[in-house]
Length: 108
Image (tube, rainbow, N blue to C red; front, top):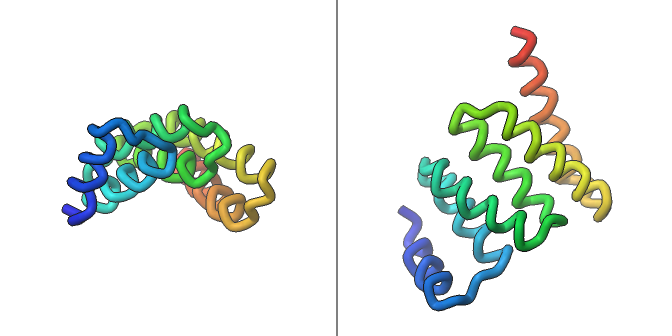
C-alpha cells in the first residue's frame, strides 16, 4: 500500500473532501491493484468536478480492470469531452488510445 493512502484517508475522514483528494486516493488504490476502491474514489472525484478529465481517464481504467468495458467506455467518453473542452491535448491523446484499444478488443 502506498504510505500516503492512510494519511489521505484520514484527511477525507476529517471532512477535507475534494476532487483532487479523491483522484489521488483513486490513483493510489488503482496502483495497488484495488480497482473497486479506486472506482469508488474516482466516481466521487468526477461528481465533485465533472470537468476533471484525468479523473475520468483513471475511472475508465478502474472500470476496465473490474471487467466493465461499457462503464470504461462511458467514463472515457466523458473524459474525452472534458479534456477537449479544456484543451488538454495529452489526456485527449491518451483516452483516444484507450478507446481504440477497447474497440479493437470488441472486434476480436
